[in-house]
Image (cartoon, rainbow, N blue to C red; front, side):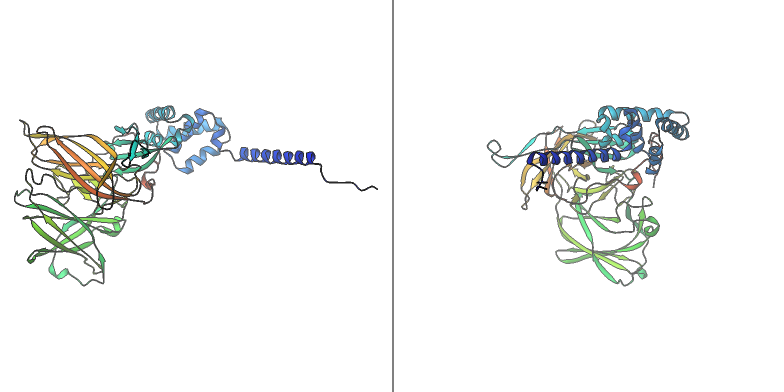
Length: 491
């Protein structure tokens, strides 16, 4: 037998490779078909119906729906589901109306990828909607000759004041994604220090000492010759109200002036919770003092009465009197919450029931925050009211605090109220700003006199965890929240 070359000729080898490649592709395609999501095999109407459920129901209910083998059984299940949830059919009609709008306006079959869809279906159309017109920002001095440009990302804010909700969304890969939310006190429980009785014999030795996170703000006093010095603090607190409610503390405040100790006060406090469980395990406190202009130092100790821990901190500042042409605006107070439901005289600021100071000037990326400030010596009209417009911009800052180019600019606030001073509290939305140091610049224009007042406040955005949905509010558990909110509690 003659020797035979069993190797494939070049052309045969190429043919075999081609066959192998095609075989692998076919296997991949069949595997893809086997793993295709169930909903992708449904009609558009059924896809819309299913994703409408995903926004309001839990996974166990959705699994029941997906497990049904044919459309006829799924139709029967859907009818039974809504008959139990909504006997008169009014909620289903509203649900379908919202679903149709989300499908129509937010991407058709891909509407479920847009964060606005879930918010719309759960809570209805926004009571107030604001957004931006993205444009290029020039960075550097040579803006027209090779400067660096960045494009502001598109964003939108949906607000529901009657429900105490506010949502920030950023455009990401063609769809708006939820990046942050702000809730009123009805949905955002906090713990705070409330005044309590104190007996000197209750001071006990403490086992450990921790630094106290504290900050302050300076405002005009009701006594024109003095300055209101507001001191804020924050300490860790049990997340659950059953563990923390009623816990008692002693606050020791030593006030020093240029000639030494001026006064030493000891006050009793107890922790109060505005809800069953805190979003952040922190308790906030505040004490206000009215002092003549001068330089002061305040040393603070907070002692837990069982004697476990003492929190100690101090701060020092110069208090300058407020008068027209010299000092016309207060400090800017960054706040985590503006309350509308609960009332506490310690935290109340003018017409605002309570403003909870953030204490720290650092915020997580994307997270909105409140600012509170006052502007004095405004002109008034014949009715004794001031009229002002307020705009604010966020500027890049370097380590020296000098201003760079404006990144966010908003000019849409108008205030009119009695008296010659403005007390303002509103949200600031950092949106897509990168971590770093920034300066908030607030412009207040007196529409009667034409005076322009500028207030500046430095803050820092840190690269914290991005927004994740709050567990209690992930789903509506049953049906959309179509009824008006309950009347707020009074306390």
